[in-house]
Length: 76
Image (cartoon, rainbow, N blue to C red; front, side, top):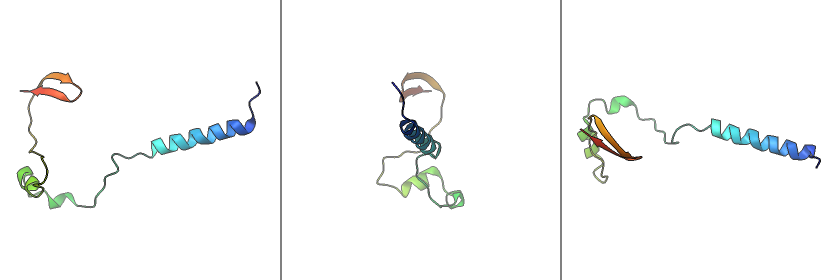
């Protein structure tokens, strides 16, 4: 079976376009222009109080004692 040069060119262009789109990915796509200084004087509770329609809670810290599965851990 002989491979057509046009076919190889199309595959090459497709591969380059795919790689370019993967390389261009930059995080979640969520961006804002709010300076960090806007929140530097507020505590986590104060910030979350402004968004009372969410179920967010203040971040806690501890030592992970057991990993149950991909999204469940036990913390001491």
